[in-house]
Length: 412
Image (cartoon, rainbow, N blue to C red):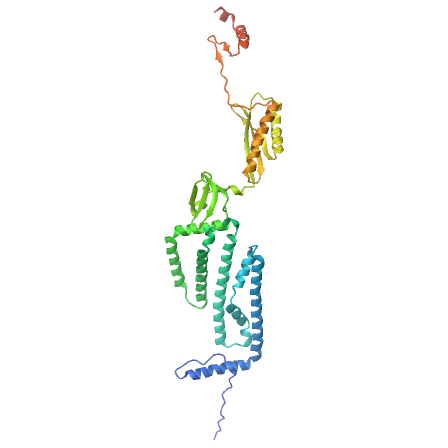
């Protein structure tokens, strides 16, 4: 009789048993499933209690560090908000860090250290993905809105429709950011988002075509805010119009013409034009065209440029150019360009008036005659002799003409 040895089943480690809960089946009651799940969790804790304890301490430390970083964001806002710089914007975004994100980051960092069962590791990864995507969307939204508020916080934009329309801008930015976040989240969770993206694209195109005029002006207003080609109170010139900017709205800009009329022009049309921002000039140039008589002596002509520069400096201006320009029909033309620092015409105009008077007085002292359009007409007698309007010279001219005639002409 052959003895048959009984083979004992290989021992199963509690760690392996805790790898995953027992699959649900028709022969498992809810009580049995809960009992198996509880046993697997208890076995995992019993085998890795030290690692779990250390991981818990590290997770708590990470959570405290992230909470301290959030408090530092509040400090940045308090210290930098008055200066309205980018540190305040970043600080405001940091303060929007959620407790859910802090907890999930702390758990995810120490997840693998404690020998976490596979089902629990997948659950942590799933929850962390949701927390990370939502938190990134919140940060992006705060930074974008902070940048827009930073650009609209200057004196030029206070009290305007742009500030009143920040609610609409926040709505549009929030919708766009969280729509992108939703698509990214579904894609990370394994959902096929191709159809969803296509549907959003078609819907966006339809809305854009239906309201393209409104959106064009809206984006043009945002371009004015960020690029700042002009601001409220600036004197601008475009096409044949000039005036002072009174209001920059989301749909149109209102410019008060120098003649008193209020011009309302769509932002899109305004940005398509060449705009001269007179308020942005750093100096005012005053041009003078001066014509002197051809009879002026050459040595006096040579002294005119230095003479003009001397007068400009004496009146407090800066001579940019003073010199001969061209031979005119009735004058020798000189050009004088004077630069006045700044953009205040209340300073430039009086200087121009004083300079005109100074030039006239100096030219009178030097005996320089200002030229004006002149024309000389010469008359001849029937016999060809010149006739002049000056009687004292008529006899001399007649004698000279008679002497020049030939004997045959005299006989006739």
